[in-house]
Image (cartoon, rainbow, N blue to C red; front, top):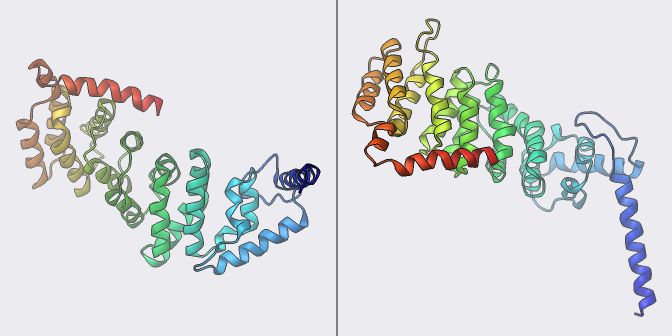
Length: 317
């Protein structure tokens, strides 16, 4: 093959690439709107047929046309043609793998929130548990921890009035079994702590606190503020889970809070009591020294540095 033949082949490849890009390029690709005017009839028919295949998919080879969806600039528009509501559970898992691997955090977050989360909730509502493939899809979404929190956990917390306790328990269980980077978990925990308490939010708080991260002081202060905001709230009626969260927090982090915060928590326990749990909380608070006392004694220099350094890391993250 001479140089002229090679040039012709490269020219054909370049022309075909430009043709495909022109077909798949769209200026406005808001998900949920059927905008197919920029696509050729062949592409529309192709992805509608792909959708029919993926609705029945159980295992085996994924169509190549489906695999390239995350690489397209108008992937939401193309995906809508495949009718994601009809995808099988196995397809949801394969799609989650593709999107978690090929998209940036903000786009993966969009996929998790618009496709994965509604299917997870539908499965739990209908079957009271998650299908094997759906649970693996949820687990796979942790490959993008920032997108996982912003696309799944925080929307559930923000919409906690419609989030059932069963949904929170099942979805939060993945946090117990998996390692999630500190900074992403700390940022999510701070966001949840800023919200009013609800049982669903309490489930996520409990599981994140129980992981015993070396939390930055900014997050610890936010958690203390979350609890003490209810000290003089006579309308607040804490359930057992709230008392358990408070106990777990005190057991793990009393050494890292300031003495005035410890006194505020003691005052809180006086106002909102639980016969079995409150005495334990009070004992932990009284027996464990606070961080400012340790710093005065020269034993907490590393803790003081930790707070400053990790606050800066959270800002950059």
